[in-house]
Length: 306
Length: 306
Image (tube, rainbow over all chains, first blue to last red; front, top):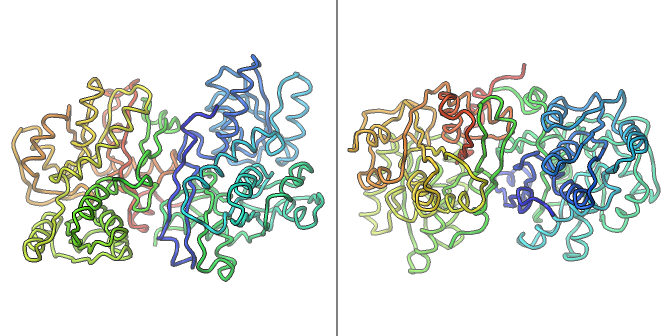
């Protein structure tokens, strides 16, 4: 069901990162595809099922990457795609959603407000609502990354996964725990958007009033209870990282690995930077999950020419 | 013979580039692997053959990318690798060659001087000399890119290939002309390093006294006669581009595609920028052949935060 352009993404040991991190690091690179994030894996599953059922429209809320992916998957199947996003989402992401022919509706508020608005549109128009992390297709899409890791990676000790709504972590986590149970599944979230991590630690849904992070792709306040239940089954740990570490991670991935990543995709390296003792000498895979950053913000994060 | 980490590299339509270029553009991305260039495909062929013959040492001259790749391929097979390079090669490339446990010998002079020194070492020590573009393995490695294009790409009209020594162009060109003869094979070289292009146009070897280009990966002065013979069989055109276009190409690949590339890998986009009429409305594949650039130089090329 998934276009091969999203599958079998690069997976390789990145030795140039290792002196700075003190452990063996492999990259699973999800940015080298038409939408520059892993989300196409899940939207392909959604859109091909909808097209098979003869449905002609779909709506989702998006922090920016799901919307691009659903627009891409829907366009090639003749689906009418509506994306609801926060007006504060990165312009680069909003521009790409429009360029992919989706209808874009902006809300004054954050991602969780966009979720409410998308649900209202779906009820009003009677169209399918895609709920990221709750709808099993979005998790199954992410799970294909897990399959590729287990099948193709040399033995590794831990996988670092950006944690937002939870689709990426539960999808990969389920596969890894089923097929390579010795591998530690570690979720990483910004300290400025800790709702799901606090929920995982407390084993009950904890919401927060605001978020404060540059990692727009994972900035959510209201965990979905069913997703938390899944996460409790598959995650070995959930850690929070500081904003400065996210920036340092982006900069390190640029300088040493030649990779342009958005803040959410640097969470894994941020976690390595913050806890070297934990990972010393181990082999860690980090999922570089997206590369859609506003260019000017990105240039500031990686610094000026010296 | 080739480690899968170098094969089936990403191949995808990059629509975000298209408004700026006026044609459909697909990227074949050769930077997402342990040596960040396509050269590993060829060095895997060389090194696995040497290991199979029980040989234990190998030497090459390199502008920087072949050396990294041969060091990588040789290290995992227990080969003693010596790389000869110009002292003026990018420090990022030289550092990586050392980090991969190769012996690095630097010459005062350019790539063609390094070639002479490597040949002398091979004669003195009786070890295998790998001659990029002349040795068939280096062309066969590049040819696997052509196979992946022909097998996996949607129909395309032209392929843009960086031209230096000629391995990439003859390798891909042979496959494309054999299996998809309607596709135009276009080589692109900097106007500041035009020896092979002039040779192709004149159908005889033309050498130049110096080179003057930021595209260090293709800066050669002395075409190899046998390689020119091959190139005359498979190339439909060879074009020269200005330095400003190479910088604009790198900047465009960074800003719109999120790709960090070295100057040689931006030659294809530079050619599109310089001749929009020629490519208008066509579907072009450009080979993004390497991503090893010095970080500070790269930051200057892509510009400062605005």
